[in-house]
Image: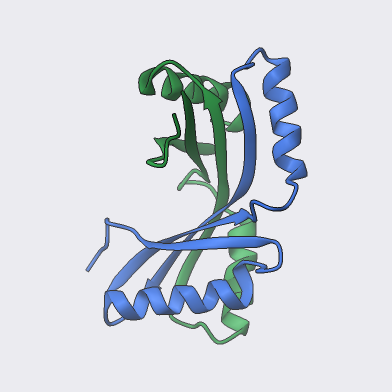
Length: 86
Length: 86
């Protein structure tokens, strides 16, 4: 079966996020003064072939740990998408 | 009240995603052969002050349309986070 998995990779809360700060500055200049903080991370959609949901999720976790996220600076969440095709 | 809103910005399905293709190549080299496609987008977390959920979501939609996403190349989803602080 083919599964779609979404992986959210965000900068750790303890760290500065210069990209987020730049976006916040831009939003303030456009008049969005009620926005207090912005953090920018990655969103990765994987399409993969696996025998079961568990296998698909395990594979995505491995891929994230080995290539997609840097645990020194980022945390991640792996989520099986609901629109799974057979 | 303070709301946290997550905005997912992904490249349109009709368009090539060179970053995703590069990641797919990397994953294949690491031995993840069951992964068929990768698409990489942004995930933006906004913390903002608003009177109601509706207002918070409307503000985030406006901010996304004006600065955060490029509708020519990207689509987006705005989602109110469940961990809302008072």
